[in-house]
Structure formats: structure tokens, C-alpha cells
Image 1 (cartoon, rainbow, N blue to C red):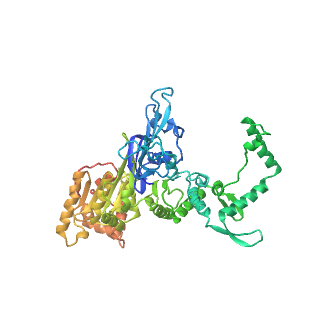
Image 2 (image 1 turned 30 degrees about the vertical axis):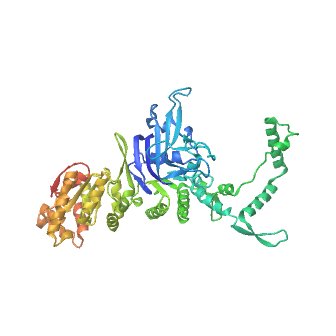
Image 3 (image 1 turned 120 degrees about the vertical axis):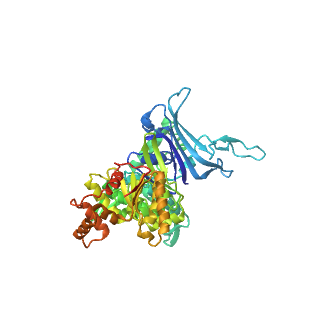
Length: 566
């Protein structure tokens, strides 16, 4: 199953209705306390258990705990769940499920909380199912499906990895844990009669027997060994007392009711397994180790899941980057992408290693405003050519733009290295205001990155050279491109331009003689490094044309619909 769309109303910090379209792989990014975790919690709340009741919610789950507010969580699936009310009969498609934490309006329980569960069609009509199994010669009867079938929830595996990376939550005994999901399949294979192991007949002759048969034999022998006199006395005591409590005659009715201890099934045996660590002959239960070590084991289980190519699960992951070095973050991101080929993965991240510019259509930016939480996805069409162009220009630092409060786009390294140093001299902290300078690898790439920023409603400005080497010998083409760049001022983009290029502007600002002196001071350095050294040097004045760029990026000067020639 795959979630296509979710609507959440009044759940925790999510005021009013938040609507999110969810792709196969979805990264939720945004500032702290914007509501990202509550989106995952809402999904896990209603899908992470086999059966959900009113007790799964509390007043603390209601926005501001307000009495008159109700929680609504509605999930639409990409493909409908086909539900058979009776085995072998026509299935009814369930497109949506909806949970409403509301109150009784009338009657004895008026005012008390209740949980409504509904199965809906795409046009929000209640799903109807057969009321009784059809019989030959009788007309079929239908009834509204007034709850969500338990089998449906059991068949939607949801694996939740929260910020608490406690290993115990992923051990086989926890429903829908990573290991439980893996071991369920292993147990099905184990129970296959074709899965055999070598055994012996009574006369000692070798023979192949099913592993399940051999397991049952071993368990039977184990139970025999466990049945000490005290064990039997306990079993008999429980049975006799139960007979007495139920009104049976202990002596006469003993054969009518038997109560006894039953050994583990193979699945229960798998679920009882724990992970232990043996290091230098020191054995310890892995759940007693530090958070970092436990996280490493959880991630290793996640990678094992990917290696076995399991499919059909919905993964909810909070901050996968926790406890990991950058290299391991990138490795885990590759694992998430592979898992996402056959499972749906929805995760929260604050790391640029878990988002990439080419996969911009997988990103949802979560923001908190005065009117509540908003979700923004790109309005750009994920055209394969555009994605490949972004892939060609792929740079991990560019991924940071999705986390920015405002973006300054520059053509190359010269401005990217120099501007932050001038900002320091002007006592402006780009990081504090969430600003990012994005170098796009040339003038021809400016438009694509500006469109990307606009598609997410991120405030954006850019700096360009009117006479760029990217268009050498193509003046007419460059003039047309420059005109397109200038048109962005009508869309709220701040445009800074140099008549020629950055170096020429420096010469104009300082005069050519001083510029040459500064160059001699930092000779034998390339243009980008030299520009940075100029910016650091407090003996060299800050060029006037730099100041408005720095102030806009630092969110001090807000220039709107303005083309600034520098």
C-alpha cells in the first residue's frame, strides 16, 4: 500500500487542516517546531497498530487541548484496498480511511470523546459491502462499512523509526518493527514443508524431515525436560482453581476442561530473540548499550531490510542523520533510496545529505505561520531533462537551498567566497537569518535555480554579469538572456547586475591603481581566493556596490521588484 494524500486537522501543533501529497520517497524539511514530527506521528497513530480505539488519543493530541476542537486524519491510498466482506465474494474498493476524534452530541455519553472510523470512496461516499454471504436465488443485500476492517490495518505494515533509536522498539517482539517484518517472512519460509533438514529414523537411518517438524520435536523434548514436579503442580493448581471458579466439579468434570502450558510456535520463538554483543569475551545485551551503538544496529537492520528487497511497507523515519558522520549519512541516504524503490519512505531531515536538487519533487517544506502549518511542494514539472541538468550540476552544498529562509544565487566561486567575508565585516550573520548563497556553476544555470526557489516560495535574489564568458562571441543571445533575467524583478526577485563582471566592478570601486596594488599584495592566487582575501583584509575598503547585496542576503535591506545595476 502507498499513501497518496493525507489531510490532518487539529492534531497537536497542526492547526486547522494540513494537506500533503506524498510521493514514493518524501523528505519533510523545515525549521524546528513547524509540525514535521506531528505529520509522521499522525500517520503512525492511525496505521501503526492493528486496532485503534478512542484510547489511542488524548486531549493532549488536540490542538491547544481545546474542548470544541476535533481531530480528523484522512488517508487516501494510491491504489484502493480491495476488501472482501466474505471470502470468495466481490471485493469493495476502499480508497480512503478517515479517523475522527470527536464527542458524542446527544444521549447518555454526551460530551465524552469517541472515535469514528470510516472507509470512503474517492468522492467521499461511505463504502458499502455485502451484508451477508450471497445465497442462490436470493437478492444480495448491502450495508455501509461503519468501521475500518482489522485485516486492512494488519495488511498495511508501518515501520516507525523515531528520534528515540532504542533498539528494543525494533526487536522482533515489537509489532511492525524492522526485525518483526523480516522474521515474519523468514518464518513463512521456515514453515514451508519443502524446507528440510537431515534427521534420523528410530533405527539411525538418515532421512530428510521438514524443519518445522524437527522444531516441534525439539520443543516437545524441551517441554518434557521442563515439566518438573513443581511445574506439573502449578499447572494442575491453575486448572483446578479455574474449574472451581467456573462452577465445575473438580473431580467429576476434570475431563471437560483442560488448561495447560503450550510451548512456543516457531514464530513466537523468533519473536523472543534478542540481540547480544560479544566484544573481547564480554557479553552484553545490545539494548543496554549506548544510544550511538544502538542506532548503529538499527541502521544495520535497515540496510539488511534493503538487501533483502522487502516491499509493501510504509517507513516513517525521524532524522535519519542522527549519530552519523557525513559519509555514513550519504551511505544511509542511498539505502533509503533503494528501500524507496519498493516501499514508501517518508522522513524528516535537517541534513543536506538527505535531499538533492535533482529530486526536488520529493521535497515538502513545512512552515509555521500565523494561520497555522503550511506545506509547500515545488510547482515545477519534474521534467526528465531538467532533472538531468540539475544532476549534472549536482553539488552537496546546493542542496542546502531547501533549508534556506532566503537564497542569493551567484554565478561562481568568486562571489560565493567573498560575500560572506564582507558580511562579517558588516556584522551581518547569514547563518543566523537562515540565508544561503548558492553558486550555480555559470550564468546559464541561473534561471533554473531561480525557478526552483520560486516554486517553493523561498525569497530569492541573484547577481549576474551582463558580459559573461559563458556567452563569449554570442552577444545577441546574451542580450536576450539578460532581458529574461531582468524580467524576474516583476515576480518579486531582487536582481543585482554587473555591467561587465565582478573584477571590473572592483576596479571601478577602488580605481585601477589601487586594484593593481591589492592584486600585487596577494599575487600568485587565483581569482576566487584573491577575492576572498580582499574581503578579509580590513585595510581594503568595502566596495559600495557590495553593501546592498550583503544587506539583502542578511535580511536587513528588503529590495522588491528592483533591478539593481552595480
